[in-house]
Image (spheres, rainbow, N blue to C red):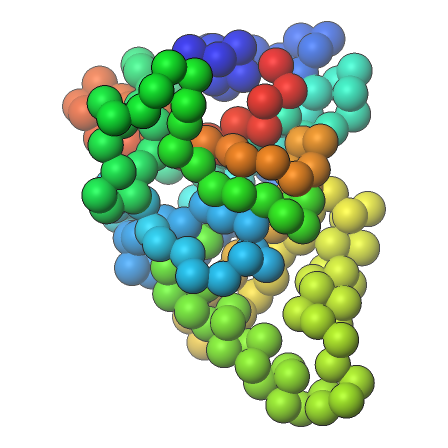
Length: 202
């Protein structure tokens, strides 16, 4: 277990780490995606959760003044163990020592989203490109940048479908680009109580 996961499991707040609840994620389908929102073709994790609205918490490395991890809290119950979040077809036993299944980051951003929210985000990008024509630079420049600016470029809440509240919670990814794993926190009953993306600052 990483030091970050240990701190989250025990709800540790000390001189090295603090946390901040930044909003709630609407889960409609139960299929969760953690990814760089600007890299297309994302696949949800194999494990599903109950539809609902769940808080998203950022864990800050105090000395580095960077986001060490992002947590989708599914329950107030503390995890009793952690398991790497995998997508269909991924087998943890096939990994070489020190390797992880995770997602690549090329824009310094990660996110949590329902699978349907990612689909709606891609449609939003297509509509924006059509509407702006030659004024469309990129989805980041014409949309996401302004949402992040509201929170000093650290995080943002992108509403992609107003009718049902589907949204994408965006956050800066530690030191930036890289490859980051996510982990399910499992409760006493064997069900997930949290999902954490670890940005390897601890």
